[in-house]
Image (cartoon, rainbow, N blue to C red; front, top):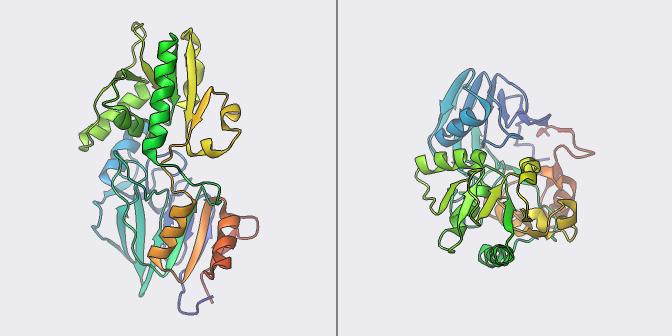
Length: 330
């Protein structure tokens, strides 16, 4: 352990920095926390919450009115508090998603949250900066998770939809209502396909548009509309599809890289379009940050940390079987 790095980091349903009094993406209410984006596994209202304006708006719609004091911070605008300052940087994951740069007592710590370095049509491009300590989200932290080009995946998705429509079936693309569904809508624009989205997706898409993201060529799904079209639906609400007589379903997820994905998700097809960093992007992030140490969180934490150690990088898993609590203290 580097004797000059003294910040303590703990993992307990979120990232805790006890010496600074700060939490990142805490799963339960805390006195002071940063929320990196509005997905339910990262978002909660706290006594004091630091987040981007877009994340605040999305959270208010998804989880109800804010409780406590909300600090809406633009990207690159430092938030000063007793222990130092926090700066939010674009993460490339979904609208308003942020990495958090904490600077205190001459040390810099970067928490990525969920992020992606690949180009997105609907999320702000990620910005990675140098830091002494990197806390890295490793959902796809194995070498087999390398995402193919989005353009190639979209060509396959469009072909799937066209074939289903030709055979008088509704093609249903199962995608999360926040993030993936908007990216799909944007990438389907200009395909000539008529696209209708579930009301929960429509609500999120309207917020995207309010924040300047151009989404065209989609409409709100209506029960009385029987014209052939592509449906974008949240996976957790697929039971509602029972009222549609003929469907062909496809899961749109990075997990589609697993050979059994279509069977696990009980779909006709699976397409690997993801809003998370893949294995190569995780390595690229570490290279750009040039940290003195790395802590992995979520996903393949132990495997990716071990991989980094083999590459000569000091790395440890947070939340793994042997790293439940790990202080950054010599």
